[in-house]
Image (tube, rainbow over all chains, first blue to last red; front, side):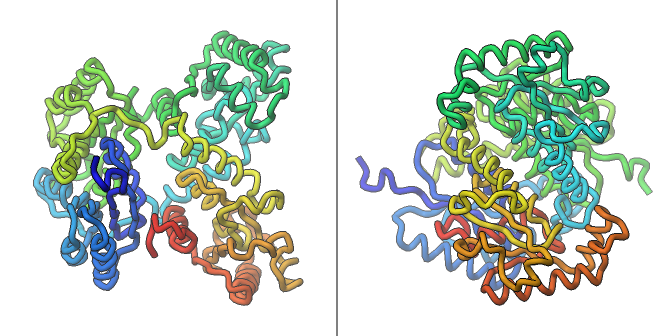
Length: 278
Length: 278
């Protein structure tokens, strides 16, 4: 057994922007290795001074380790990149690695401008995103049936199936106005969808879940309640599933899915613009 | 002038997971080129059948174009990767490009398991994330002063400065319980922070904004109102800034920042665990 078997390997993410995308990406790469890592993000490295400071930070941290760190970089400006690349460690240049072959394929140079266009605060896309978040908040849990015509999707399902996080994620990540409506015992007794939803049937998407999992989630919220009982969860889910089937509403089972996976499955079903394929 | 000067180049993102990280990443790379792109995400390509279907889709779409498409892939299993890599286009393998050098540096093979650990629905991290979203929703806009002790950060600022999207983003992306509290004219008249916040001063972080920008944002919400008037915006922001200064509350100006940039700046200020450096 090695002495440092459990000591995490240092991983730096150095970016001239937030470094969030690079952090997410490095996480999924590192998850492929059965050894512990400690990720450290160094954002906003957009000047030579900050680049020198990043190198110093990395080299100091590394001096105390037996192993070289892994360094992911996304640095657009060549002069900044040149400085950071002097840090001691395994350099993984996420920027140049992909920009170079694209330049060649397009027969065109990249701008090398620190570009944050896709979430710059002044763009139309950004405004849409903020508007979508506000919309989804105002239309959470059937709070408002006003302006449902503006929704791109209306999620339905029993309490605690995952409607709220999914709606907010769709708004935050895709600027998509997502309303959500609970299906409650009164709806099951009437045997029809909440009447506010009737005019918008083509926008409705259902979330389902395994009764056992729903029972666990509800018990954390209201331990020992009738609401959380397995029998009651089973009843509500059966009724909701029957209703979705009757009304031909597409649905996804959220039991072992992350918010990203649920959102992606919904986008595959509703997007007709071919930006995502099913 | 070229005939196809404005025809967007096709870009495919093929992933065995959601492909969201790869999509975000490819967007920031493509933003470096002054030519239009059309991104098409093909998620959940986790079987040979789906891999063959993806190749067919790409080749069919490409047959109608003059230019080869750009194809970003994140496919963990070699047999799936081998199939997709036969598609016609510029292949950019985001997975193997980085896994290979890390394997060498660590002296260890990657698991090649389709791994979604970091946002799997059963993990503690995932539970924390859902809990944080619920917490941030319940503590949005000063709705509840109960359990503020559980907050990791309490954002303050005038109405429409960006508190809600930032709180939700911190919860969604980092599982961080983020409350937010409005600073309103009554607080300025009293000249002290809302009294519920007094015990938690070390957790408070301020958001500021330029008056002109605030005026625009408020005018979209309530056109022509006193609330939206430039003069009133200027008054509220001055008072809020003076209060933050008096109470030694750190703050960030949100005017030209994206949600990601605001969140990153806050994390730099509050994280003492060295997962992000300032």
